[in-house]
Image (cartoon, rainbow, N blue to C red):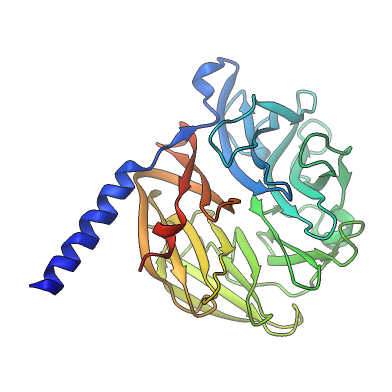
Length: 352
């Protein structure tokens, strides 16, 4: 009876808690008739604790970069762990016919610089030609540099006409200071790119990871690199691990992670006693719904204790660690009509 009681307490406790989570819609297109929708969330915590939530502002239509003549990158910031947020600020805005999409960020812990990446296309002069761009903030997101085109640094010459893009969401920094991120070439595979000089220059790791589409990378506690990938033809995720800093990789299925071919989020969450990975996605094999967080205690080999955050329609997500140890989760909700921020308490994350 005691065991049954404990199971019931755990079940109802988790169910009740998920109902108590507060979802704040940060980007609401219904408030502006000129905006078709907001899509592709990314979130990051700066060195002073400022939260930066970035997203596509899609005008004309909700179409992706290749089919939309007017997409801008906008942000909101929070200085109190997501309790309140600044007004929407447009940080990338090209003339009509030129679009920017798929924001992602990396924080350089050594310098405090924030790198925000996006993909660019001039639909009038160079349709179907993707340019891979980056801007930098040295003051926790208050100001941003002029855009820098790094396409030639992180791609190959024969990729010019390929369908390629930097994955939205976030990259990472290793213990030795290397900045790492993922890009996708739909013809050549997923690739890792990085910087060894705090973002002054970037380079490509010339080893395609297959299968894979939009992917996330982290450094594991043992120094290995882990890439977790969306796979469009499967109903689950794939992982790729390098034990030699990107020189070679081995790949395996993550059947513990149901996935409807959707972008996701992967971060380290290390406690005093355990090395923990957190993964958020639309945890469903068929439909983009059931936004959940899963945990791995064995360097991403297996995943367990998947907890539902929102059962309804949900898609792309991005996570960040808050100053107090909670998780900030930013995701697409209700069939892309809302882009919400939710604080997931530390005690819920660590509860088995």
